[in-house]
Length: 194
Image (cartoon, rainbow, N blue to C red):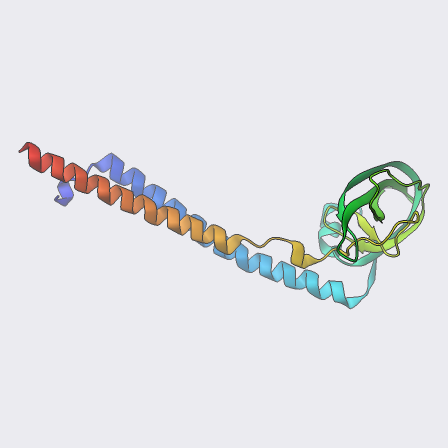
């Protein structure tokens, strides 16, 4: 098949799709570098032991993840139970209280762990612990007579960007192979018809 015999529109669509997929692959590689730097930063602050004021906006929360913090829970507006892991690795329930904070604002505290899904009785008070993703403090020490929850760990944050990049490059290669096979088949049909 000669170059002039290539279907212009189909070739253009396939080439644009391949370029887009390759660009997405390189974008994922860039995101991989960014995520590795973020995880390294989280790991460094996790070990420094400093305590920060509980963040009240998204930017401050992002900057203070995995640091120790505290607040005074002046009123509990509700307690929910979700699946959780104890500090010893046992599966069970994490009990999370929604609090109004002294001085204004709201926050959540993961009070602790139990095998019982029934929420504990908790009326508020001083909270101290580690800021986890989502903004809740994982209480350390645990509160309301509960056992300790597993501490938030930046290593639990998925970093799948290399796999995503590989997928985009694979999709681009697959598109080229399929298009090449379609062109061969078209050339055979055209050759058989003449």
